[in-house]
Image (cartoon, rainbow, N blue to C red; front, side, top):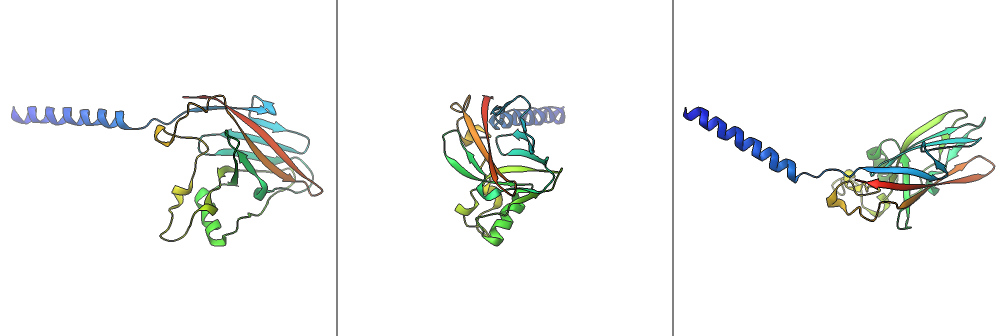
Length: 195
């Protein structure tokens, strides 16, 4: 009888702990974005030379770039920029592996990353992050890599308020070198909703 009662108390205490921990955890914000300039319901842009596809999130923007020409083109990463909802221009970086990109920067300590080649009729995909790496010391025993990932927008309530973000806009400028000229493709996104 005593063991049964003790077990019931233990189970009840465990369930109570789960409820308390669940209530104290942070629920991530959920964002809904749209591409408003050039306006497109599919979050993409196509012209005779190139195609862009976007999947924005609070942390980064996934971008696919397809070269539709018959010659090599380049994404000029050192000139790419993100203009946030308050109008501040920020350095960005385009790549696949955030941690590796930071390590490569730390080893070369080069503020200007090389352009990315896109062969004829081929596509590259990657993520865009805010590039704050030059502002910090990197290396063994200094700044952990994950602390250098600054999200585009707050992911959780403890990272900041989202009240002013609804219906705000931000821009992405992606320069493409076509050999004879560089075209700065500018995209304006809108935060339709934040939940």
